[in-house]
Length: 144
Image (cartoon, rainbow, N blue to C red; front, side):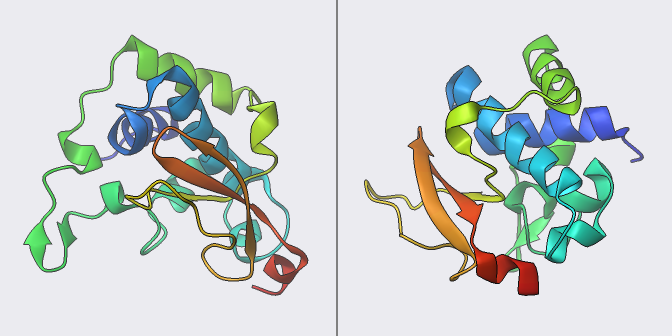
């Protein structure tokens, strides 16, 4: 399916953070758009929401299979509502959560604590929102 960038963003918001409330969904949208706009490092080579969402091994929701099994929770099975599209529009227009910094990564640790660094020393923990931990780039990220 050929979704527009707006629809892809709405679908990834719903899939990755649909149960995290408005702030959680805005945080995920902020990360995606931060990756679109960052001018250096690994994500600096990406220019569109589509390139960010479909970058290999970045978002579980963009994968049809995980661990050799069909991934039921993928963006193709999402049915975004006006809420998801509204947050996508907000993020694409430049909206960002100020307490998030310039986070480029998030993940759910499935435990009450967040690691100090993620995915390695290129990301530094900045805040937890709902079940997700968010990470700003360190100086080491520029070399990715």
